[in-house]
Length: 219
Ligand code: C5J
Image (tube, rainbow, N blue to C red; front, side, top):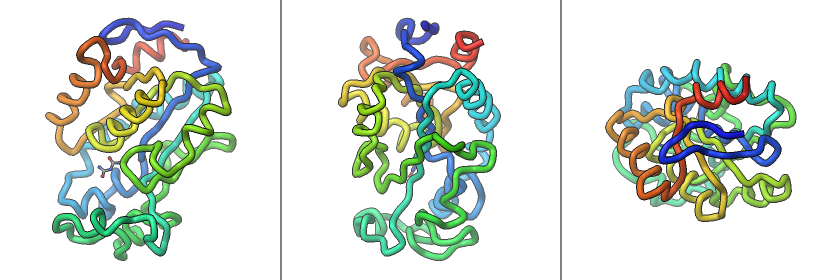
């Protein structure tokens, strides 16, 4: 398959490509979670949910592999360095009790993927303690074992966990494409800058394309 993309068309084989959905969990998208404790307007992120849903549905129908990630820490916070927990002045820190349970802790209501994108049996769900999906997760080994060479990214937030994961993937040899309308930031100018820089210099980190290009190829 080939889809129009920037900086040039993106070629991929369905059998060797995974859709990677970064951190579409209640902690970031709904009020009362980690995103809001940092002072952010989470409604900005809710705008991409229909586009993400459309891509996920089409990808499932096509039979492509799906990875869902969650930024999640163990209940004893043994995988949360103090440098992360103590940074800044949030209204609640990681591990504190909030309206959706303990902030950014695995198994809590706020840590679940939003209902619109609930993982289906057979899809990979990766809990990651860092911003990048490849740090301390075993994701690379899982993808290698499945023969995955190409990754399509969507999710939040563009300049933090999405960008970090895409850079990690690029360094590990994956060809990566970011679906522009399926990612969002609490800071729209950060999203715009990230999309620009990922595909600059001949696709130094990867490609970007609107989801309509992928949907047209899958139709
Ligand atoms: C952040 C993320 N923004 N999923 N996490 O802290 O991007």
